[in-house]
Amino acid sequence: MNASTGSVFDETRFSADRLGSLGGATGSTDERLRVRTPITDEEIGTVASFQPDDVERAVERVRERQPAWEAMGIQTRAEIVDRFGDLVSNRRAQLLDLVQLETGKTRQHALEEVLDIVLTASYYGAAGPKLFGDERRRGAIPGASDAVVTYDPVGVVGVIAPWNYPLTLSMTDAIPALLAGNAVVCKPDERTPYTALAVASLLEEAGVPDGLVRVVTGDGSTVGPSLIDAVDYVAFTGGTETGRTVAERAGRNLIGCSLELGGKNPLLVLDDADVEVAARGAVKGAFTNAGQLCLAPERVYVHEDRYEAFLDAFVGETRALTLGCSFEYGPDVGSLIDGAHAERVGTSVDEARDSGASVLTGGRRRRDVGPFVYEPTIVTDVDADCPLASEETFGPVVSVSPVSSVDEAVDRANDSAYGLNASVWTGNVERGREIARQIDCGTVCINDPYTVGWAAVDAPMGGVGDSGLGRRHGPEGFDRFVESRTIATARYGPLEPPASLSNRTAARLLAVLTGVQRRIVRWRS
Ligand code: NDP
Image 1 (cartoon, rainbow, N blue to C red):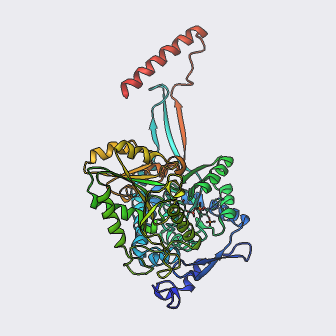
Image 2 (cartoon, protein in one colour; image 1 turned 90 degrees about the horizontal axis):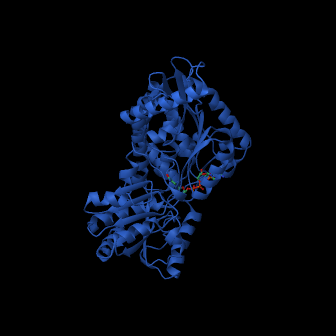
Image 3 (tube, rainbow, N blue to C red; image 1 turned 135 degrees about the vertical axis):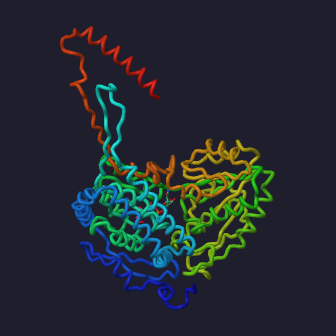
């Protein structure tokens, strides 16, 4: 879209009025947060600026509705979650417009968010009943006792989401939390509140009871802490430093938390890789959502035998990318989120250049395309002390370095405080899997930059080190949101030796019983 042609709304299926009705909730003050679109930098609306008391009240209200939701049973909740996936799919045109309006990303990158939520909802919808049933476990003394584990929802789950994937990241944790029988209060980023508001109304349309899910809009440093003080679990996605403050607060309140944080993700091209394929994969990984993706590769290590060929292909593919802000499918790379972020990305490239790095392509802000658009950028010879070498850029910038062996590639991949996602490119999948085991990341993708790992929704996803704590997706992503209760039964009275035995005889008997128990355990395992 051309920033000079009237209002951004002219090209969307969303009107200013419709946005206004989404953000119509009021807090205890008249204060409103202004929301701007990165596409033209114009104001598109205002939303309530919740204060601590408002957040507390919102949590109290959803808490009142939670027992009835829990009582509906897992089968009904699973059906509602599945129906929600259908609704997101059916309403995708409007949702895509909204996501694009708030983030400035391209339509195909917005579509990834829609598809992700459809997949996640159908996965948890189908898996729900299996994830939630009572489980029989081995008792203390087989035959004389047994143990059954039952599960309850934790109560109210707080979801704190960033701006880069406002649909995916406001819902991907909310779905299993709801399925488990919890109420949810979601705090979206102040730059992207409307997607969360819109999708929360779709949850109600799918059958989630009115008022069980609330979206609390406002400044993170006000809303975030009060939310963490009021809920029973917090699922946070965002930057590492914010994640630390969230964990500290959750720790003080003795509630659980999961933290999906940043990454400085390595991509390894081995000597047996098809460099053309690897280059296409690197382009997809590094420049999806203009690099504002926690899983995006920012460091590429290529075996020296393939280095030149890979660089040629990678630079060629990158130069062929088209930039643009359009509500149609077309441009390959869209906008960054705002001016401050565009400045940060530009500064990190400039610093690298000033300290001797070569910019092979990109390296410029493109105000002619959009106010915050930055070119897809490839740099080489980055000084190890330069922030671009080790800190997350979170933009369309990737460094490439030659390595002389697999060991060096693995060492350099692991030389990071982060550990979110890595990818390995090879002609030999078994070799790739062996190398994957040596990489300190929560996800390692073979011959794909990130999609194959992220879209495997039955498998856990998360980071180690500065990339976070806990896992989303799969049974692990569900288990965060339940408390277990072990109900153990002594079938023939208390597990004690008969009172008639002397202490010495009782001790002998206990030793014999423990030995029998150990043999049974070994025999059964
Ligand atoms: P932030 O950590 O700044 O913000 C994330 C969310 O936390 C926002 O909703 C923000 O609110 C809120 N927040 C801010 N301060 C507090 C606080 N004191 N207590 C509680 N919540 C608070 O991250 P960004 O928005 O900059 O997001 C980008 C980061 O997120 C990147 O580092 C990226 O790697 C990471 N990320 C990780 C993902 C993963 O799955 N591992 C996925 C996507 C992103 P507000 O902004 O409204 O003030």
